[in-house]
Length: 68
Image (cartoon, rainbow, N blue to C red; front, top):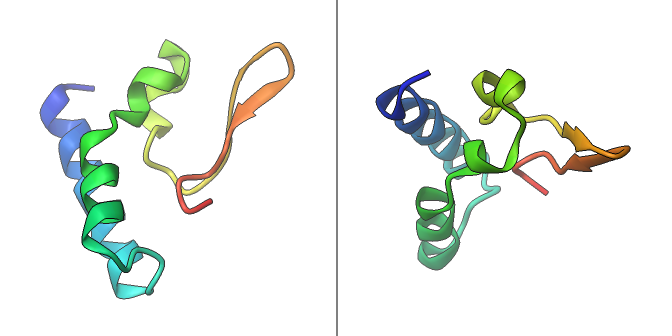
């Protein structure tokens, strides 16, 4: 996936979270836009970086779902 694809997926997720009342404050919304979640998941799972689900990151650990 390209940077632009990640950006589009991230923005789509942010807009859903705003509509659902999960993201409420400007600072938290800015943090979501700033942090590249795709950098924290293995390459083979990067296309799921902005899915609303936890993802394995190795050694039996996961990165939490974005809404947590």
